Length: 218
Image (cartoon, rainbow, N blue to C red; front, side, top):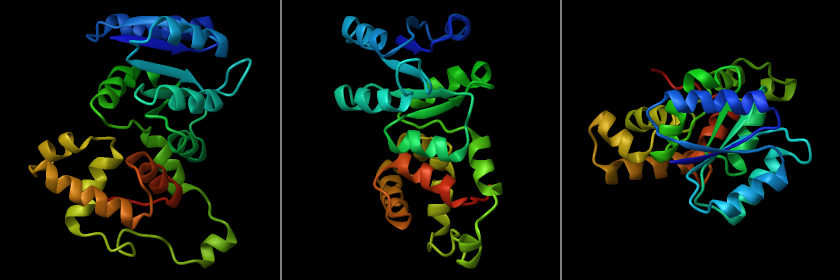
């Protein structure tokens, strides 16, 4: 497995390399620190499997760079790194094509599991970002409007169960194993969920849930 680590702080890059070296991923890590070095590494290593991308770089926004990577290498999963993981930032990154979002404060604890989840087709979102969204004070206009709930969106009991696992970043295959459903049935439920929240992708659904502060019971 080949992973590109993009951060302008050498200590952060070294720390991430150390975490990967202690894991069972057998990952070969490459480093970049600005836009030019990112494209150099992507050109030199067309077989990269994964990118960890800092949201703030010295010569450009990491989100702008994310957009360009998604355009040129749509098959290459990119997970954003940031010290700031408020729901708005997470939502923006997912809507722009990120496969996940890792807070730097907890990266050493969840890095390997997040990589495994994304490579399996899932999306990693920090739980604390979803919690912050649910607890965020509303504006007077939002308070006046009826709150959006799973009931108001007419979710079935099975859709709620699938949605809960989708919000954990699980892929369809992982969901079908977890709740013992055929993958084709899971796909039908996922399509219904996407229609209900008016989005077209799983990443957008996760972002929309954070934006609306939707609570999914355990």
